[in-house]
Image 1 (cartoon, rainbow, N blue to C red):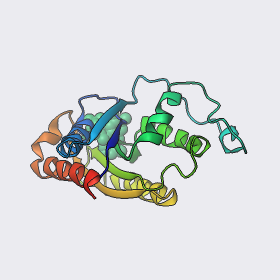
Image 2 (cartoon, protein in one colour):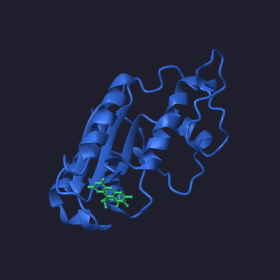
Image 3 (cartoon, rainbow, N blue to C red):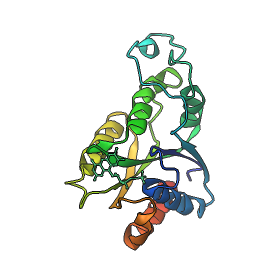
Image 4 (cartoon, protein in one colour):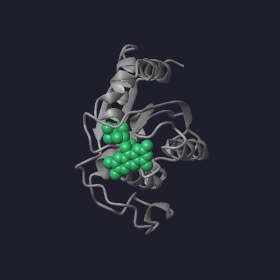
Length: 188
Ligand SMILES: Cc1cc2nc3c(=O)[nH]c(=O)nc-3n(C[C@H](O)[C@H](O)[C@H](O)COP(=O)(O)O)c2cc1C
């Protein structure tokens, strides 16, 4: 049974559509007594990877950038499951989410094979008509490839169309799918 879930919010809108879907996933996970912690990337000091490769060296002590990501690394290591929530920005994930993902390059310096056995759920929202013309599919494919490459288990992805903050609540189907994904994330 999965115990710890870490939710990463990649939108600057704390109460935006992707965060609402993440909250639904949380609800599902907590219904099974999983412990959920949420990290809101916006406002944190998390610089882009500078490709110094310090994290890839033998006996590396980790990422050379001393910023808020240093507090996130141990939480990522300890989590049994991750939820990544992002809006579609310019036909892919938000910059906040991508910077976070790039900085995960350093995780193996803190623990070998850090994603092995970790369970992943993705939540995305977009203003366009559908997942293809909005560019959502580009980001979903990136998550599929990235998490497949590092040996994590992509448990599921929920996504829906909504432009203004909160509008995703009108989509009852995706709101329910998100709760179900939360249950599945911690149940298998
Ligand atoms: C800078 C910016 C770029 C955006 N780019 C796209 C896009 O490429 N495709 C799309 O369908 N919607 C785009 N949108 C709309 C958002 O994806 C949409 O409003 C989404 O629901 C926002 O999620 P949030 O409330 O979690 O921030 C963009 C919005 C912003 C602010």
